[in-house]
Structures are given as C-alpha cells and as structure tokens.
Image (tube, rainbow, N blue to C red; front, side):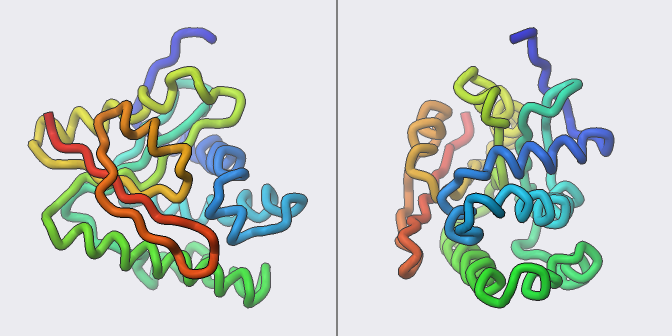
Length: 206
C-alpha cells in the first residue's frame, strides 16, 4: 500500500466516510443485533450513517486518509454534551427509522442508544474526557496499522491538554487493539438479553 497520510476531515470526504462506516461496521456485533438480516444490513447502514455520522461530523473533530477514504476517527471534545439534539434528529431524518425499518428495529436502536448513554454517563461522572466516538477502517485496509494511525491526532491532542481519552466498544476483538494504543479496560457491562457486552476503556494522558 502506498504511503498513507492522515488529515483533518473536510466536507469533500463525507460521502467516503459514510460508505466506510457502512462497510466497516457491517459485521460489528452491535449493528448485527440492530439490523439482523445480513442481506439487508449494508443498505440499511448506507441509509443510517449519512444521518447519524453526519451529526457526529458536525460536532466532532475528525480525521481521515488523504485522497481515498480508507477509514475515519471522530472525537468529541471534553465540553461536548452527550446525546443528539432533537433539532438534529429532526433535520437529519433519524426519526424516520420506525417508518422505514419498522418498530422492532427502532426499538432495538433506541434501547441500544439509551444503554450507551447510561453507560457513558457513569464514566463521565469521574471527570472530563476526549471521547473517541467512532473509528472504522474499510475491510480491505484493516490489519495494516491504519487504525493506530487514525488514533494518533486525537491522542496527541489529549496528551497536550493533559486530558484522558475514553472509548466504548461492543466488540471484544477491539480490546486488544485499544490496549496496544495505551487504553485500559475500566468497565464491562452486559446489555440486557441482546448478548452484547459494553466495554469501556480509558487512556491516561502521556
């Protein structure tokens, strides 16, 4: 693979970022639970991520690859309030989920979002954090070190400011990746009857 450069996200990257999210998260445990039909999930994620990730890009610091989008990381600053403002939900079209995919899917997505919010709120009581909201690499570019490269701008800023970083994952395979980048598992909570487990990890500033 040619030399890869990590750059701040610009609007020209957005379509590539949405596609990278859909493809990169296709096999993720949480999204498999929310959208259980393999044959339909990619199309569902391609509809959802321009709305959900579009809101995150509005508020987060974000980094991607120069040229073709091979992956992206999104970081919420310490002063960012949790949750999605109602106006953003309305203007993004997220509230159309029950009409487009049915009440059961909407219920799973709502339960998952509520669980994440409660899990994170318990962590955030202990102080302020830079929050890694999302990191994803397209399947064919995985296992090449790109994930660690996408982490570095956010981690470097947190280090300069002396602020810890937090990430929540539902995939146990990600724990080793975060551990190699300085994160330690601090909280582990099952999510109801879904079979999912939430893992919270924190990295102290260096």
